[in-house]
Amino acid sequence: MSPLPSTRAVVRFGDFSADLHAGELRKNGLRIKLQVQPFQVLQILLERAGEVISREELQKRIWPADTFVDFDHGLNNAIKKLREALKDDAERPRFIETLAKRGYRFIGSVDDGKHPSVGPGVAASMDSIVVLPFINMSADPENEFFTDGITEEIINALAQIKELHVVARSSAFSFKGKHIDPRTIGEQLKVRTLLEGSLRRSGDHLRITVQLVNAADGYHLWSERYDREMKDVFEIQDEIARSVVERLKVTLQGGPQEHLVKPGTSNLEAYQMYVKGRILLPRRGPAVPKAVECFERAVALDPQYALAWAGLADSYTVLGYCGFAPPEACMPKGTEAARRAVALDPLLAEAHNALACACLLDLWDKTEAEREFLRALELNPRYIQGRDWYALFYLQCMTGRLEEAVSQAKLALAFDPLSSYAQTLVGFTCFGAGKYEEAVHACERAVELDPESFLARWCHHLALHTGGWFEQAVSVGEQVLTMSGRHPWAVMSLAATFRDWGKPADVEALYSELLARSRRGYVQPVTLATAAAAAEVEEDAICHSLCAFEIRDPFVPLWFSKYWPYSAHLRKYPRFREILARAGMG
Image 1 (spheres, rainbow, N blue to C red):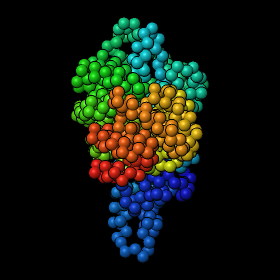
Image 2 (spheres, rainbow, N blue to C red):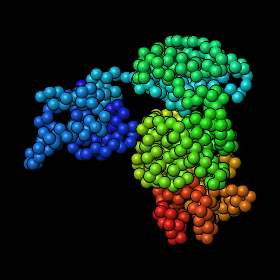
Image 3 (cartoon, rainbow, N blue to C red):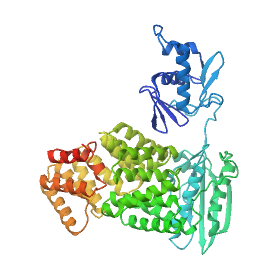
Image 4 (tube, rainbow, N blue to C red):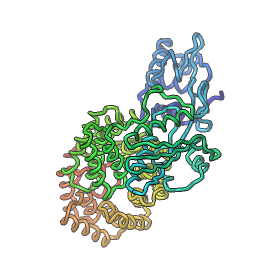
């Protein structure tokens, strides 16, 4: 095997990546603590992966001749700590092999950036599949939720298999309603196989037809039709997933009897309500209260349904965070629902992610939030929402680890490359880190993937503004105003843009609009404070800021963060800085 060029910055193997320049080891994007000497051993082994490196050579390269140390003890300790970090077994190694009286050899599959997944004893590539959105053949459009839910369950089931690379939901659903040649889809997603299907529902009777397609030539590898009753839907999903596994010749880690589909409830109506809620929630706007109703119905039907409690927690958090309801009406409920979800299923990534957000946005407790974010990603490294929220909410806004936030957002995008949401989060983290051109490009791609996404267009507006392209920013900002029904976020950010562009009359008009709306109903005080600062009405800006802290506006930890560009106009006021200092957010 040819050695890796020592100039490569990052080498990937398994779930790990080693940054040879920074001296950092990561697992699924999360940094792992590793002392200098164990990392040096790893670097030497990676540079000559597949070759035997003698103990003598390691000693000479790591400990200079004039170093007074017990070399054998030092090297043994370094190897031990390295294996602990990699969770590698000396008796049955995946990465570091010991050769008696000869030395050590790296035996894992490595990616040098040019020839991925090449290594001794490891298959050159893994099986890969995209589960395309099943087609609803029923007359009732409400069955669209149910059909999408079946697709998602099969995606989740197959994603449990380590030998199988499964395209994430957003990328798979980007092909919904489109008639595209399987070979084109295979090329875009870099997959070998496609699973497509259709569902027809009549009363309690289901007919599900599925086909496994070779992406290289478009030929069917396998097809099946299932005529069953609604009560058998979980069994059908499991049968489909198992049939795919059998045809692709991959191994089930839990043995042949383990169920791949784990719906979390035996109550079919609760399951349908959960599925509908999960599909409605990302649509935001008026869909959010409807999602809350779905999740509330699901947990009422099955109080032990942990996934539904996690969904309910997320929907309450979104209600408060996006300003659809005052914090006291929803945020404590979100925290309670998240804790209930974790208690019911401590191994559920969605539950820990929901609790992380509740801790951050309701309790303003960044210590517990970090712990819960990391636990969620440990349980499911490919959980896109969890990784994106960790990147933006915690790494960027809470700790100012801006480059790390960008890296985490890009890792989420790598898992789900056709996701408009994942692209948007790359945009948010990039403009927060001062990478304005990269942020604009990411947002343009996000809008291209989903032209109806408010979040993508709003992020595009923010990136153009912070990058100094004011005329373009105003143009996009006005589009965002229209498509969002003049959401307060869009109003305040456009006011800030007009302020920096030197258009005070436009700023005053937008601030007056928010003030008038706040007299008729709830408007997040953070948005009022930002618009007041843009209009240079200091007294109002301070009053709105105080109100935001008093009612615990969940937008405070993010928008008022010293690492967030839009807090700059407020931070010029000494009284605002005093408010932050009293709250421990200085």
